[in-house]
Length: 116
Image 1: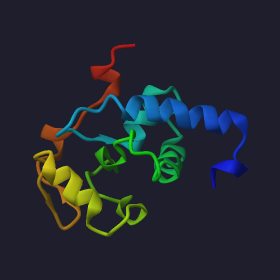
Image 2: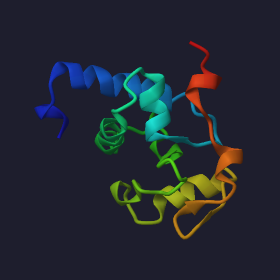
Image 3: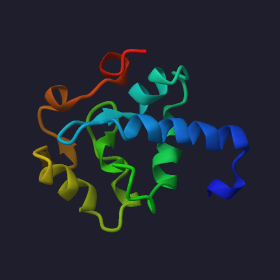
Image 4: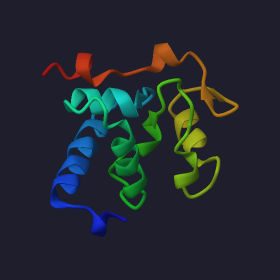
């Protein structure tokens, strides 16, 4: 729960949200790629916590953040078990058995796309 997090963690979450907002429709990124871009390579789990904490924020396209293999590991944090997949498919991303098809084609790396 975000209210129990330190100010530093809340700031990190806002940094994560800033990156996630940049992911274009029809593209996806990973928890690890976002953590790496933010200079905290070992913090992919914390990126996942940030995604879990934003479920009430419609301005964050959390459905575009998946694990390093293109699996929809965060789907249980959406209003329904199929909501994440449905949102991705509306953007042209095909998903089968909770895995993005052609993940490398859809992958958006903030390290490359957001040139520091």
